Length: 224
Image 1 (cartoon, rainbow, N blue to C red):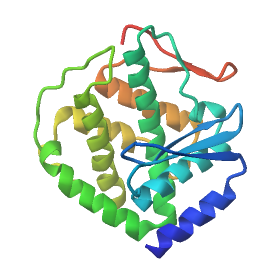
Image 2: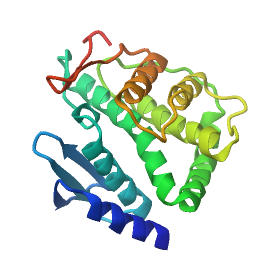
Image 3: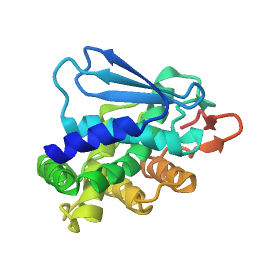
């Protein structure tokens, strides 16, 4: 994948914040950025990571350098339970990944579309099977995690591939996908990011985020 390797090198070189790389036993490549210390941390998995995943983490880091600091913030106030905070942080990252995917596709469209097509095929049965959704308001449940991932695949197919692979979509997955596609991801803005995040919350039945830009955190009600 010469395009991906070239893009990885280019984005990595473009980063201006300090970079720390850490080996780990994780299954996937992951990273996070701290706008206060202007640092990025990239975690290398125990097995060689899929190179498109590495590019996505770098693209996320690059966006964190360009966007207001709330884009990379995972500070969530108004929650009292750890599980609820984890769920909220995941929603913020899921919203950000909608814009990260657009950045990756802009760099390597053919590779991105091929990977998306494979993901659509793998998730097709779940996306086309309506099933009950029970939200755990104070934790990040596997059902919620899976639907968020499937919804971004479904949204990507509609937005980038121009077709709808879910003819009888699961209602929650479809609502989440619509929350993604309601905001074009090619030009990320904080209002757009907030719209996606709160659209995901609405589809899941969670209370919306309220940004506190001067204080650098997100506020939510502990009730959902």
